[in-house]
Image 1 (cartoon, rainbow, N blue to C red):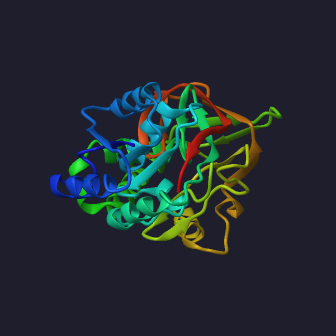
Image 2: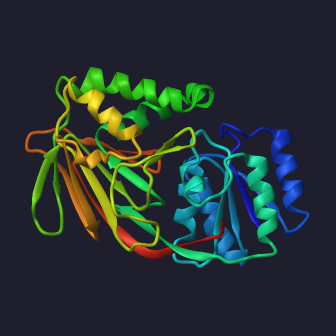
Image 3: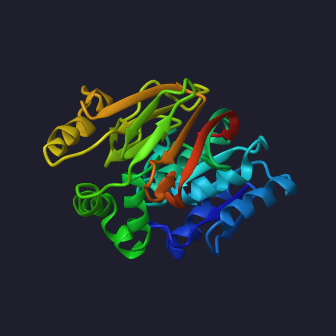
Length: 304
């Protein structure tokens, strides 16, 4: 077992790291390594495949999970996300306990019931994502949150909510970047934000799932997208209600369009528009003039 630890993750400190590694070593042959910089988890996971490791455990948040998954694509070496970040969406999607100690105990029990399974990965211009990606508003929020890691660690989802409100009011109510989203049928949808999911839900508000895109799962072989066509102050209450509702769908909103069952999706800046922000699994990727999303069925093995 290679245990890849992000030492900057929200819930990670030296004492907890030692306890987790010691516990896992009671059932597995463990090698533990800390990440040193952005992208390091990908390199470590690729090295694990070359070394014949049986499983990679990513200790951190969804960013660490994403990097490790990119290093394991197509290898058959299973990945276990051990939640220690601010959100840990993917771990929750797989049914892994949200508490890092409980998740460690869960992984110890799996030694007696080892059943890896294949799941899909999304991809945007060569970078794979485990559960969601976005272009526009949500990616701009991620960009700003990532710029203040100490606030992210302290306030967690509350900092995301505050940042989302600030970015929306200051940037997207005045002159938002305009996007053109084109599906495989060639139909164009104009909007200010495109969310693309490889699984459901989009995120969690505490323990409550937040659903955005429809008809998608980690092994469906397809992606699902939602496009926010425009937003005004009058849209905020009704959109917020749908995000938190367990009955109302976000894509049922008058300003949102649903694009389920996708093999690919193209997003470009509208004519004369500026490059737009892109995020994958809550990790800011950069600004682009155009990107293509697609799905890679069965690309990742996981154990949960």
